[in-house]
Image (cartoon, rainbow, N blue to C red; front, top):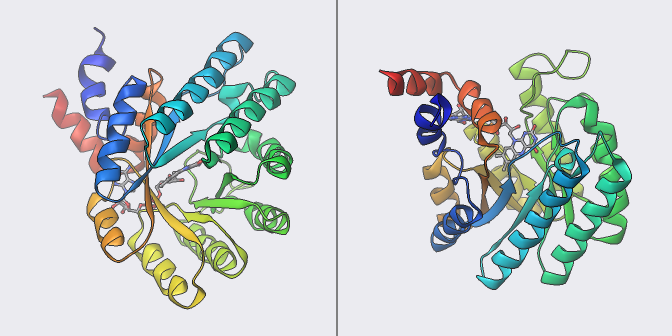
Length: 281
Ligand SMILES: Cc1cc2nc3c(=O)[nH]c(=O)nc-3n(C[C@H](O)[C@H](O)[C@H](O)COP(=O)(O)OP(=O)(O)OC[C@H]3O[C@@H](n4cnc5c(N)ncnc54)[C@H](O)[C@@H]3O)c2cc1C
């Protein structure tokens, strides 16, 4: 067993369910028992080999069936580069179509995650295309991205569903607002538009100021929305939101490509680096 598996994997299990699909289903059932829905992601990005992209699509189809057969309140969230975006776009569209059609058949929603800036335009276009056939598909938009305001408008004009998040990738200031304050202000602006015009949208943040702001907007608007938070972060907030009557879902990643995701979560918050260092001594 290498360093990553020995040292980082046990720590990473705070943010990921585990390596197997069963670990994610188990976490989804635990979340359900607390009144929390599940959003399950099979980890993997930037897949170039069509056979591996096919295997990822098959994994999602099996995951959807397992969620359905286990009567789990949950659905899948997929990254388009794991289905071949960036390598084999026709193949990616075919794979996404299968997953979206299966979600519809099983009465589940399907989320598309937003990745780094080189995929944003294609992700939005692919989303609009698939949403015209499958209304239960939604896409994440990143508040740090300058273009998100116009993307949100196009998506809402088409009656689409959006999960609003701050954004997790390292990007140049040409593409993103460079300061935390600007990102938070952008989040507030986009969120206000969602509460005005959105339907079936999600507020994906752990930021207590933004969560309070969402609650203030929710009261008068009676909007159809849910809060979405990541596994391992702000569990007390999830419980409190459920108690207050809000719909809440927890994002549960799993799979052997756990390292890149965990690294993002660890480095996003300084206290996690201390956790990692402490686990080494
Ligand atoms: C359901 C969901 C789906 C997402 N999907 C995408 C996506 O498709 N594309 C994308 O680019 N990004 C996605 N993200 C990640 C998102 O962009 C942010 O990187 C992440 O949510 C941290 O931002 P924040 O809004 O919580 O605010 P922050 O200001 O980063 O954090 C607010 C507070 O939350 C707590 N916190 C946040 N992160 C951590 C952490 N890692 N460890 C410990 N405490 C933490 C801290 O107390 C912090 O003060 C998603 C996030 C969620 C919740």
